[in-house]
Image 1 (tube, rainbow, N blue to C red):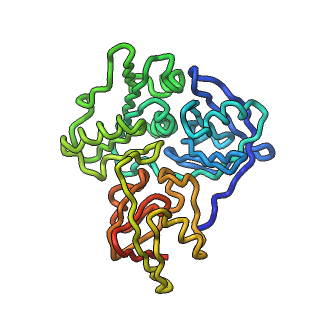
Image 2: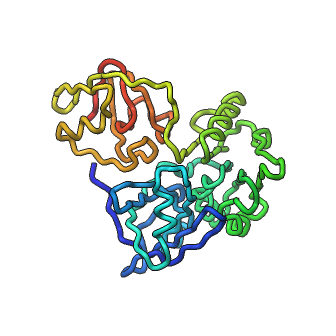
Image 3: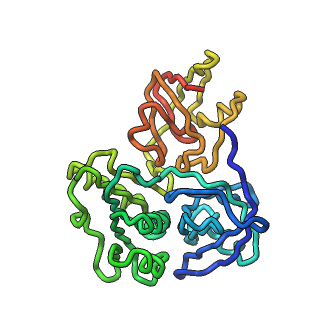
Length: 315
């Protein structure tokens, strides 16, 4: 699997849309158009020290003249957003990958229902642009602290109109999952936001009988499980028959690279899917937040996921 191509894009505009969110418009300095992408896609933003952060594209997919992303400053985060707010000013250069899509719209859906928590609304703005152009049915629920802290609110209102419903905790109006439709063929639910919202929503949808293949979730943080204790395991490389031991303190991805396997990666925390690979004949402990449930029976994310005993990798 080859590494993702990185482009040097110019920051055409950097506009604060809330006190802690900046929207960046990125253009190619020499070409009129950028590579094609589909709603739900994200790009890697590469920082000068080698760190990588993923941000969903939130512009109109039909406009290939620019990519737009929105970044929330997390003062207690891992440092990427703070750097971006301080350095990605108008006229500066951003190192950005070609888009990748782990969160696509479902082609067979007749109606799309979106639930967003804060900055998690970014992929849904792109989806709304696309669905509005195609005149397809959708609704968007945006959860935020207050209107002044709701990301991209003015454009969401312009694009979505009465399909947008906002829930503000400052006004004692928290999201009520009972407003969502009951399970129906052709209706798909998509959610993106903080882990607490995702966990609560998925639990509610499961109780109501929503099929797993009609619920799609994107996380913007790693899986949080402080009680997880990694254990050693072994893998068999199917193409060569080589056996490789994975110590408890090492990731599968790191060991495979050390053994000479060329493996792409980006986030290193199980949120982007760049290092996805196939497996068979074993039990995987999935530690990522990107793979759909339907793929987990034969695909895994080796930067964070592990196995019990012995696993055969399709490399």
